[in-house]
Image (cartoon, rainbow, N blue to C red; front, side, top):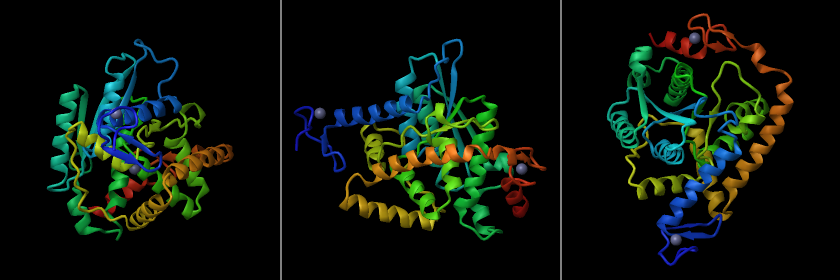
Length: 320
Ligand SMILES: [Zn+2]
Ligand SMILES: [Zn+2]
């Protein structure tokens, strides 16, 4: 089958759009979607200038998603003095897995010539995820501990680096799963929070004084296309899944979405666009209750939390 836009052979077919594209036109279409998302989410503020440059910290895990996001943002803004990119990589202490993906991050940052910061759970918290999984004092999934620690590091370092934006490589499949999970859990406050934290256009979100705003400019691109892009660009991505991954509910939702997408192409896109619209309406409704009023400084570490001692500090307490 030929490409819809030229005479080259197509390397992919997207059932949701009907497009057949060759390697060049496929790459172009992925890049276009990321740039359009950057525009629609108003990620570059009007007052950004060479004198007032923006620091964008990218959570760079070395997996295909964050590697592709970093590459496309670099290509988009390499010549633009308004945007400075910093890759932030976290070593969780997972043997045989994270070492390889850290290598991928170091290689990518060197190739692109961007600043790169590497931090570890060992240095930050004195723990390794391999040991946490073994001990498991709270009897929960590995991802539950890891998520709390990762969020803490991302937020703290984004703050230290004076980031204007914290970007992560969530793709369309990730975001459609999260949307569906939040919806099925019936937690509208959580949906409103999702919008203000990372989903809505920057100009429409409620200002969050103590948090660097987040963005996910890869969320219009399906996971498979991210993988194909990484392959075609020969990017140094590490594709093995984390050996401790065990989010059972997310796995169920993922399978459900695969099946729906197979029979009804475009389902992920429509879930996410409908969810974003609803989340925006929910956020407007909930903003009046100013959730930030409930925040206080953690008695142990001083980070903002709704409890007396934050979740990270209480988990660390249970681990020693
Ligand atoms: Zn073509
Ligand atoms: Zn704390």
